[in-house]
Amino acid sequence: MKRTYCVIYLTLFLLFATNCLHAQTYFTGDTLKKRNHQITTDFLAPMTGNFTLGLESYMGNEISLYIRLGLIGVGLHENYDKLQGFFVKVQPNFYITPNYKLENYSVQSNFQGTYFSPVIIVGNFSYNRNNYYNSGEYKITTGALLINLGHQFVYKNTFSFNIYGGLGYTAIYSSNGNGRYESYLFSHTTFDADVPIAFDGGFEIGFLFK
Image 1 (cartoon, one colour):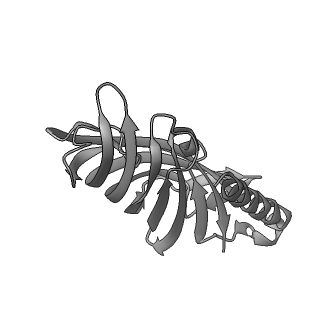
Image 2 (cartoon, rainbow, N blue to C red):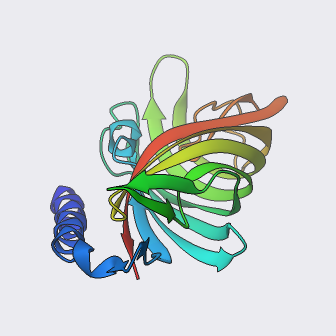
Image 3 (cartoon, rainbow, N blue to C red):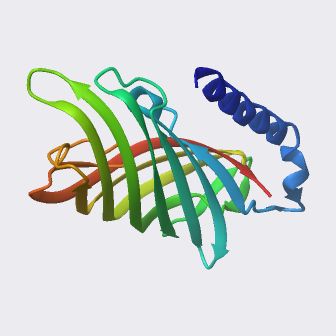
């Protein structure tokens, strides 16, 4: 799993380097050609037991479709045994302030600026836990609907930084009753099943391409 994790990050780095080498080809006259897709990752996610990879595609009218897939069980998860699972996040991003400056060029990037987005989250994971308070196998399915507010910065039409936060509602289902009161669900966080308020946040980096 660690080897797979390293290969993915090496591939993203090579993609970024290639885009930087060819960045000058995106200038046409006094404008800069827009890039319509980007691959993103939450590079801090492995510290919390998952790896997230996303694809954002420009749809038109300053709206993009953003889909993220998370693999649960990657990275640090000392409190979980045999942790495995996944989650999916789907959201349209509505950009409010898409303009920025690059080398005296006025650029309207498809992925630059403040945005808001409704987010649908579905996840499923399982693990074993053995301690004084809880023991046994946990099998948990979650769903959530959030509203996110974020801001994304674009560097030289190639590299993006995205910071966001969101709030909404969640539902938790446990097939055997265990895990009902889990608060950290890898895709988002809640208080417990009886207080279905969900919140999420993160910091992502991305690589823009055609």
